[in-house]
Amino acid sequence: MRVAFLLPLLTLTTLATACSEYAAASSEPREDLPLILTPERDADGNIVPIEKSPEQWKAELSDVEYHILREHGTERAFTGRYHDSKEDGVYACAATGLVLFDSRTKFDSGTGWPSFYAPIHEDHVTLHRDTKFGMVRTEVRCALCDGHLGHVFDDGPPPTGKRYCINGYALKFFDRATYEAALAAEDTAAEAG
Image 1 (cartoon, rainbow, N blue to C red):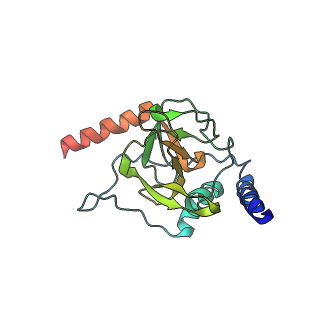
Image 2: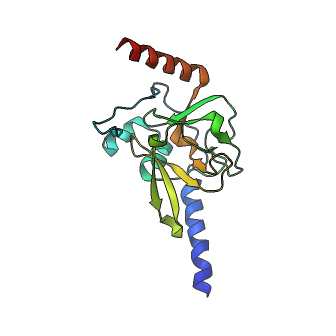
Image 3: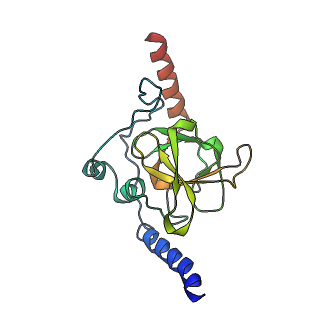
């Protein structure tokens, strides 16, 4: 009986310790990261993944971004970027710039992480079963780099009932004007091509 009580407590303690070392991180996303609206696709229409070595990712990402995106880490609640942001725009993967979520689908879940009820495009994220820490959850990853973003839960608001609970350090924000300019440029290029 005592062991059954201590196991969840040890799991929570381990998780809290793993998160705490990044509580004070203040790294900003890369300024030169491009916004990717339409990733390259193969003949079957699937997104062609970016493949880089751990050394390449370490050179491009901050320590906290690397820990979250490449090592499946988690920032401590209320410490990451964007959890309380109300700015209008879109959120992209901090490693690739692939557009993932629109601020219009963002809501305050009270959890301390940016939460969204839907991705911009369903295939820009992939879902994976996660059984770490003695729990069964659904992990959310970037479809372009396979980077860990967070988890999705079935306790979100309408219209989807989903809560994509995403690490702020896994994201980069682009304001609405930048996003709309990128959309217009893509439309112009498509018409010309």
